[in-house]
Length: 341
Ligand SMILES: *Cc1c(COP(=O)(O)O)cnc(C)c1O
Image (cartoon, rainbow, N blue to C red; front, side, top):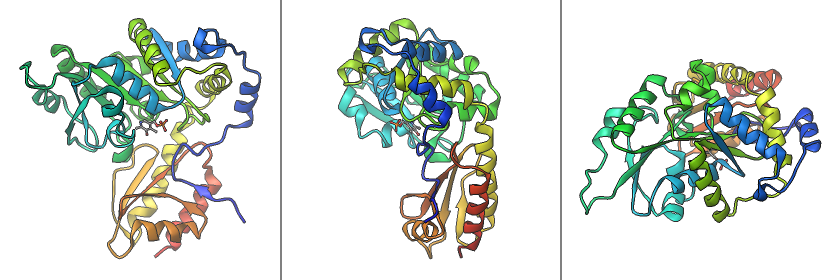
């Protein structure tokens, strides 16, 4: 049988030959002792790129987010984020489980909260109110169709945080997708955040890994939390080498993923089975089906034509374009979507 075209997620990519070669020839050591040269290089290069002092390599983006939340808060604190946030919906209740922190959910504009909303939801310092200590943004916003923040609104939120002594964390799982569209530099974006989590296992095509960046003191604390969470890895340089390769080779090409996503969106806009489509601005396509077909039925029909998507609830479907989705696959996907009725 022909290979499936897998648009379920940008996590489905397999390491390329070049990446595998880089991994195989990686210099390694025991990273719990801080002696893995490849991990140290990836951490420092990522930090430098974003203008931060230090980095911490973790097995997943869930871990970098959760380590950051733990390092920024005390049990009983409250953090502020959008209703779509990955940290709230997709990390297994980790905010409560790992940090004993509760969440103030704000309904943003396609996953993007505004400074005014943040300001209105900071608790005054009465004994009986949870202490608001952290604001978390996501960029791009996965569940809101890959929308991204403007630098202006990040700056405004950061001002509110500074004024109120709150830390600001960025779940930048897809930060390079956002920067590809805004054209903002990594440094001018990251300077507004106390910490940023960056996934290498999504659009960048690595098999494993995320890096958390921040100042030296924060990363020192985060390193201890990572160990407590069981994320201290030994010869992790084989994995970090994939990340270094990705920094050198896989960032510039992200625009291609966005252009292909737009082509899929153009077909879906006209498709008889689509009720509505979130604006497609990066590599994520989320659409709602007309009531005559459920997402489960749609996905099953489409997979018979060789294309896989993922259901987001009973009537929504998500596609994500990525490094292993080329123009030939795009043509086949467009055909398949046009043939469905
Ligand atoms: C994928 C993702 C993460 C991290 O997920 P892992 O699978 O744990 O690496 C974090 N935030 C967002 C928005 C994501 O899409």
